[in-house]
Length: 334
Image (cartoon, rainbow, N blue to C red; front, side):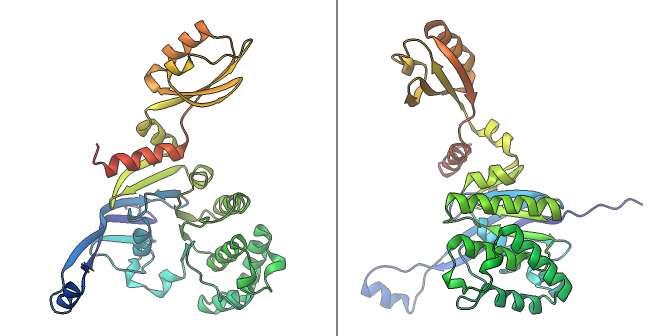
C-alpha cells in the first residue's frame, strides 16, 4: 500500500480576517461611537494554498499589507486563522505544542527577542534553558554560529551598544541555537547597510546548505531574493499571485528588455531614442529599454546605422519586474 509523503509546510485555503473599529471624526461621532460602534472586516489573508518541501529556500514577496507577515504568524502559531488548514512538519501551528515550538524559529527584523540591557550571551543562556538544549549541543552551536557570523568578541557587550547589523546577527544566533528544522524570516535585512546585508545573505546561504533547513523568507530587498532563493511566491491583496522560479517571474511579468551599447568611433548617440526609452547615457555606453518582441528588429537597425563595439541584452532589474506585478494587481489587471 503506497503512502503519500507530507510536505514540510502545507497550507490549504488559509484565511485570516479582523474586525476593525471604524472611528469617525468629530466629538459628536466619538460620543455616538461609545454606544453604537461600527466595524469593518479586513481580510489579511484570503484562502491561500501552498506547499514547501524539506530543504527549500522560498522567497515570500508582496507589497506592504499583502499578508506576508500575517501568514508567517499563522505558520508559527502566533495567531490563529479564521478558516482553512495548515501543517508544519505535521503539526498544526496554532495548537502551540511544545514539540513544535522546539523545531522551528521565527526571526522578525523589526522585533527584538534579546534582552536590551544584557549581553547577548546571557540571552543565549536563557534560550538554552527555554529549549532544553544539552550543554554540549549548546556550546557547539554557539561556537559555530558566532564564528560564522564573526561576532565572538561581541558576546559580552550589552545588546543596546551593538549596531543594527550586529544585533541582527545576534538575533539569528538566538533563533538557531536549538537547530530548528524550519526557519521563518521576516525582513531580516531591513535597515541594514549594504555590507551587513551581504554578510547576512552569505551566512544564510551557507547555513541553509549545510543544515538543509527549510526557510521561508519575506524581504523587500530583491538582492536577498536573488542571492538566496530559487523559488518565489508572490502574495498581493491576501492571495497568491505567482508561485514559481525566479527566472520564470521575469519571463512572465516583464514585457521589456534592456539593450546596452558601447558605441565606437564618433560615439554619437543622437537619434537612439527612437528605438526605445533612453535609460542611461554615459558615452560611449548607452542603455535602452524596449519591448521584448522588438529586440531583434531594433538591434538590426542600430547595427546598420551606428558603429557599435559591444552589445549586451538583459532582463530589467528584478525590483522593477516585481513592482510592475504589484501595480497590475492593485489596478485589478489580469
